[in-house]
Image (cartoon, rainbow, N blue to C red; front, top):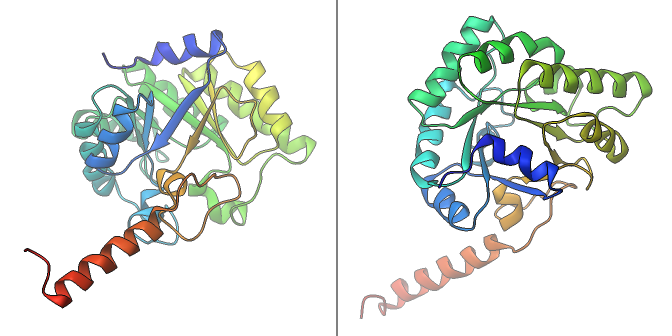
Length: 258
């Protein structure tokens, strides 16, 4: 049975932590889903993790639809959240709804995620009122990287913390089923988590959120760069290199295939 969005709120009420991971393709999504992870995010982080881009900004709706559909085919139980890429929800609430519908109808997503707080509350409300669940995202919002001046911790001053709290409450008021808190002080994340009825999912926001989300390639050690907030449980890149070299050696020696 597929996890429902209200199950996450029940988990928060019961004090049960929510584990979430990203996935960008069918086989990875299938493996994650088989492990019982309740939330799989098809993040626009795929621009950097999968496509080798410098940021998430160049990722288009067509690219997201391609990857969301692959993940949705692999995940039979988890909530599949499709990221709304840069420029697909900023122009108007109607434009946001149109693109959210595409992620659900064409991509097979269970829900969508968009970045921002007070500024996007109208868009969130419009999408939610049309029957599409929305996950919020505040703190370090990668689509705003140029405005933020880089990938920096947010909410370190009193005024900045107040703005993030207002953003979180605006998102909850607009109807989100959860909020990602990225790269903010642990104490602020704890305060936001306590203030909201909906679950918070942290990434680089300390241990006090209702759940945690990580980029799957960071957890698996598929890249050489690991963010400070990530934990590398295994270094698959070294294992893969070893396997590829063994295969190449067997082919070169003429022993492969016997």
